[in-house]
Length: 335
Ligand code: NDP
Image 1 (cartoon, rainbow, N blue to C red):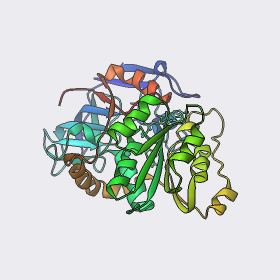
Image 2: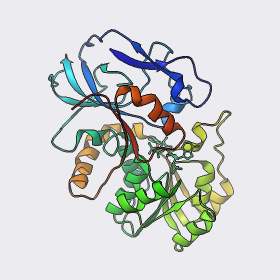
Image 3: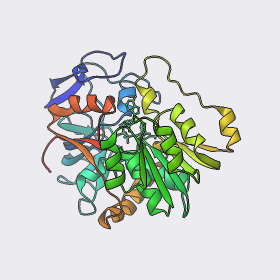
Image 4: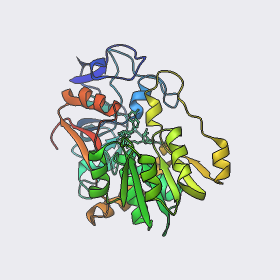
């Protein structure tokens, strides 16, 4: 079977040419585990850091051997797991860039294919969606009347965060994204009230104009610098969810993480660090709630989609450049 691996250890932001396909034996089914055929593969920004050993202390995959890590939705082809049968559908965070994955017990969740489209479990119902839900409902605790600012708003996390804020009663939701195409997605598909293109001239003034009342919540995905901009257009006692540092993941040296403590104090800001791992035990609860929102047309999602495992390196390279519009997803095999 086919697997994508690293050609060599990485020292810079990954590009498509860093990956190579190898042929490996079909995997054995682990005791208490399953083997799945990969159907959908998720590409996520943190993998760029993880491949360089810069993510949460996790070891990078061995070149010319290990699969590149990635979340998957797949169909069970072999099971030694209680309650899981051949033909069932599962989600797994560690499926990887390969046609089949062997998953030990505790490393997969069974999916109900009737609850929502299977592919939704890659983005809006997957780890990015859970992240958005955790930040908006569990950390910032958005309620009626909140004014919410979200950056990287065209992505799976940002786009879902803004929509959940609206569902929870936010009075206004404003996004920041790079370029007119992303901003159209944010307003027209995700239904934000406004989207500021930070690549356009005069964007900081436009952001101030969009938020005359000041944000009461911001959801930060990009950089410490962007967090400081968000703080500058926020009211006192703002709740700031610090979720990601997409801009710093690609930097060559130590990531520029510095926040201005004086500005935080001045705004009496509550800075809320978010790690989605803490919320994995509540994943099924989120999926049940959010599947209803999808069925009711309250929660939309957009994909940057490509067909076939061989298209993975190129789409991943696009994600690393920040050029993806929507959730990057690969269809590896047919449902
Ligand atoms: P996105 O699809 O939003 O992709 C990241 C976006 O970041 C890009 O599209 C780009 O959007 C923006 N960006 C800004 N500067 C750069 C840069 N230098 N290089 C690349 N991208 C850049 O990703 P997700 O929705 O999957 O994730 C959003 C954030 O949430 C990420 O930072 C991610 O790591 C984080 N995250 C954190 C989790 C946690 O537990 N804390 C869990 C899951 C995700 P634009 O052009 O609009 O600026």
